[in-house]
Length: 191
Image (cartoon, rainbow, N blue to C red; front, side, top):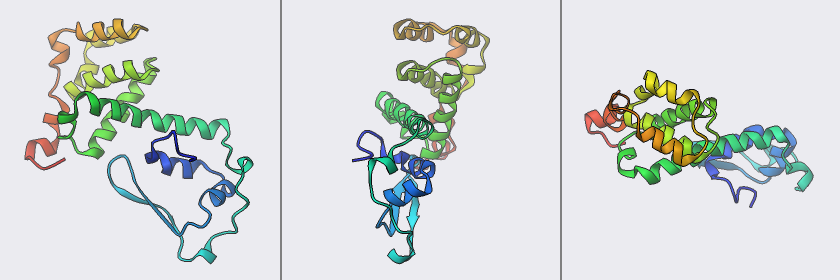
């Protein structure tokens, strides 16, 4: 239930931000814990040979698991990338299936960093920003017209969306779509 409102792919981040006492309480009784990360790779989060090798777990209680502001912020930041990836997969699912998960995650993470740095704090505008990047392998971000638009990005989604759509063909054609530029797409290898 602790992860009820989080995508469990942030579990490595949660375990990494816990204090030793919190970690012992959270993972008490666990011999081995594996999870799939956002790229689809299996990672081992807890691996203890025997139950006796684990430290004595303190009583599981709200005081031990309550996260401080910094810990909570790490989880919110981690869930932002997963939320953006999920939204993009809803919008252009077939295209994104052609991009290897590690490459897609890395690219979208970079787009998210740029979007947040430009003042785009909401998922909807971040999605439009990332879509333009994906459609041009990020080359649109280098275009003077786009940089001018992003110097003061519109606050409303509707105005932001219309502004992105109104960018000239030189911005929209600045580079190939990531799903065509990806090495896996070029070789025909499955993503």
